Image (tube, rainbow, N blue to C red):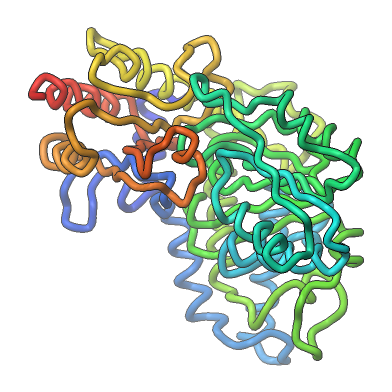
Amino acid sequence: MIFNRDLLEKIRAEFPRGVSDLNGRKRAFFDNGTGTLVVGRAARAEAEARVDCSANVDGIFSESKKAKDTILEGRKAVADLLNAPSPETIISGESATALLFNLSYAIGRQLTGKENVVATDYDHYANISPWIELEKRQKIRKVRFARLNKEEGTLDMEYLQGLIDNKTKVVAVTAASNVIGTKSPLKEIEKMAKEANAYFVVDAVHHIAHGPIDVKALNCDFLIFSGYKLFSSHGSFLYGKKSHLETLKPYKVAPAPDHAPKKWEWGTRDQAMFAAIRGVADYFVWLADQVQNRYEGRFTEYSGRKRSLKIVMDAVEKYELKLSEAVLAGFDNMKGLRDMPKVKVYGLTDLNRLKERDPTFAFKLKNMSDDEVVEQLWTKGAIATRTEDYYGRAVEPYKQKRMIRISLVQYNTLEEIGIFLKTLNKICESI
């Protein structure tokens, strides 16, 4: 396994709450889709920036200069993570929802009311409601939704293609479903969007922690993710092609600059948020050094920190494939989710298609309420998870209001999965 036991112990030690919670209780944190644990380097960088450069930018004194430098370094870190061409293509905001609403307003100002937007049945509402708002305001005719192959939990690509026409202005899709874990075939969708001359918008909030992203290779027009889904603080980042960022006219206050990134950003920037995301990048560079010997001659199209970030996310992706296999198939004579007769799993369960999903699993138990299952997982197994709709549309095609979800990341272990499966099997036996 690419992350051996010694390295996993080092990784978990990088997270102050990686093993035990604030009360000292040892637990397995499986609620990462709602928000990951914070890596220590990000927390320390955030605290330092909060104190040492709390002044606003563009002053001649030290705190102000340091604040400006900290913000720029944070933009550079995000640009390197995404392989964006420059830090000026990185916009910051309060949340993914806020940034996507701002983007939809800006695009809406170009429209006539005759256009349409195409989204999917497994997107998060942060990437749905902003486009529905255009429909409500009669800036577009309709938001069209690509349906799922429900048994697999994958997009019906033929149906998606049929939704896109010469009136399609935006194709907005998640990189991976935050409910059922399915990855979207982004390159195929990008081709469809470009053939229609539509903006291609990618919501990477859920996928950002699970694998490498290259906005140049994706040829997306916009891509968004949130810091708190990537071991950092709250706040989000939007990549946009420079030409779009300069041409589009977002809502802004009159004195704000007319150039990116500042014309897109509302209010004073939080320097500590930028320091925190830089701390995450520093952690990733450290982790890349631990696995560097496995990547001789690979990712040579990148250099410096960009190469390190691609290496580490590739290593994470490979490690998480093993976690996904363990969850679904079990190990050491323990049944996995797909083999428990009282468990209904939503989404891909084919072990030959694990590369098409992130380690995020939605499920229900027959004859037991979600709340009771979640409570027993916590009280009997110290498994931290939850049940809700996760602000995701994916529950609706299955005619459910909510689902139990576990979502794993790089600091989770096979041992934790073993405890989860053993506990869930016992719960099933009690029904």
